[in-house]
Image (cartoon, rainbow, N blue to C red; front, side, top):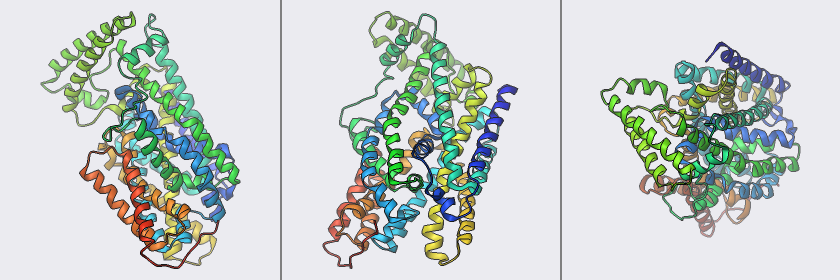
Length: 547
């Protein structure tokens, strides 16, 4: 990091926080603070939703995922466009017409207070964990890259998030997200152009694509049906589709975005923007990781991409032999890559890559931390021009802030509406609840910073954040399916359905090797089956939600 990079980094931080505070001014009522007075245009909602999803994990982990595992992770998102269309037809108009602040407020209108409270608790647990992971992702990497301690990095990020989210509410979060998403895409395009331009003169873009495919890094679609395979066509379309329905249809961090819309039409357009853009964006991000892999076929990579762990492993007695093996494997791999470029069979390249992977695996055994999350930033800091390094690090820094701010804001909203106002202090004036909302924001910001310290050891963070969500989203989706479509089901049946569904998910996770995307299917189907089945046994008075 040069002086220019540090200046660019801090200038970007100051700009984004100031912009968020400026756009969030005037949030002086609970409605303005939590729902932006329902004034958000469709494009702002759509970009904010994408920014909350993208976060810094997109930079530091998805690109690394493409590097080490190819592009099969894109299948995770294949069910998203279908989910968006379904939600535009169902959840968006139902929530808007019910005039609620939270998705769980609707559950009391439709069922009863205990069902609302149970699902509220499920949300607070899973989203609280997710907020910590979203903050930990860049903190782990940036603390190493910038030379700061992990605790200082999380405190700086968390402090800035708490600052503009507490004062500006959802307006500050949304408008900051719009700027953030634009810079995220710009930075990714720059990284892609650089990766291609730095290839050897005799390696064209089409050669790079050919080599990535030969090395198994363009494995975007796997049509085999394997319950234990995390990413294939079926787990993406079905398991991923259920996850996306749950995430966008029941998670307050996303529902709150489209509740800020000017109208049902604007909210639908915001979701449809994601339906059209998300899969191509994720494909592009993973493709960047694949191109960085090809770049390192010809440019010597470190044995481990984690700089601190690399220095530590270099002091071990095993290191000299590992480095010799690594150099030999890299030389063989580069020679094989050039032969494949000339038309030779791909078997030599695959064999050479296996040798490289084997040496790295042995080195990883001596390390205390997986280095997947450091691959992309190792490329950025070593090969990007002065100034761009600071800009990309700044974008990653604030991408974490954008994701965390949205999650913290939604946690504060649910805490205030579904817990404080519903159970602890009814009938207070608007000013009191606005103050309570700001206090809840501060609490959840501090919680995210505290939990981020635990998330350091969770491995590939793009997978970790989705695994945590999949432990809970199935039961949340199931109860809203009961609420929207099965009018015969009443409160107690829905409550018991959620409880049994959550237990079923935990049992599958603990006692089987089924891939985590299927947890969403299991949970939802168990909730629906139990809730609907009990509706024939339990007798309760009908209760209908408005809208």
